[in-house]
Length: 492
Image (cartoon, rainbow, N blue to C red):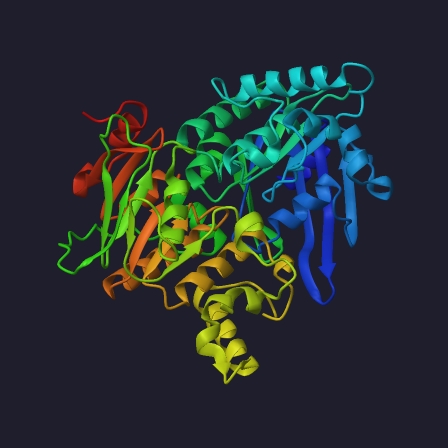
């Protein structure tokens, strides 16, 4: 099939035998990939399979060690880079967002569109990005004059997506979406995927990378599976099921275990009042020892703010917050709030456990290395050496390090701010198992997630709307329809 696509004049992009080495590490091994116009190509694989490396080469931010890049049949390998990719209409929305936080939304649009210059360029840039936001995310509330640094991570993702699809003097021919819905709630994700379907129907091409397999199966026309730096499957989407897709990636699909109905008999771990209350009518979030509590609702409605209040409430007094026990947090925005970018992988994983790793006044490097290696094996961090820089890891593997940091600590309460962003399905299954084991041992979890399927792992779920808790679900009432209803209309 690959050769047939190669000879088809409809092929927009052809990566031919692409290799990429980082020192002694081979990230890509003679990868060939053809992307026709008018097709959404789903690209899946475990963290570290080579997906993002391959897409960085196609976007021009990395150069290949070997192989060719052909665009509409022309070999552009020798002169290929970011500027060349933009001239050819190839755009990329990276998993780690690339917007400048100190600039406005409109000014960030100008960076990608040099023709926006001269008198009145800010107004034209605002019209361009605002119009595309309207097309992709109707009903959004983003003002093009807002500073990007003041936006939530979901809104930053929306701006980055809109910027990639917007066009001035160059037609947008291919857009690479690397985990584009990882920070979006279900409604926004649905709007984006509907736009993608319309875009490819109109003759554009999209490469969609996602660990949410239902998104891939319902949106992509073709699916390519990568494993260990190579392509292991390339077929039309209808030839895959969720189970066979997982198997192609090298994982075993596991059925969702029935939720155990547990009665909380231990002392209350923490008690938090939702704020602001309207006319004094507030619902209180209560989590007991050993419970997994879900925080749901549309993105940006107070879930993250609640977790931050609880995190700080353990250290200093917070109005309406009572916390018994120590806390650890898995940050949702790992680049801004989670990682120490100049530190090693091991240093990032062990920073919350230094009390246990010291001898006298000094950190015991052997104990630190042992803990790092233990969590490398336990959670599957893909690296040859835990002493490597944290930024040498893929985004999903960086997220694994944040899990290792929190779960490896002595914290009684683990706060998780949509932590599965960019994490592959195999690792998700392993982490879900760890959460159940830790909860059974008495640890408490507060878990904000934008993935409806993850709510099935929770004992109770609080639904947020406009900064308030509007519904509390438990048992068989934890279903998508109830969450969506409560998200849009406060429960009676």
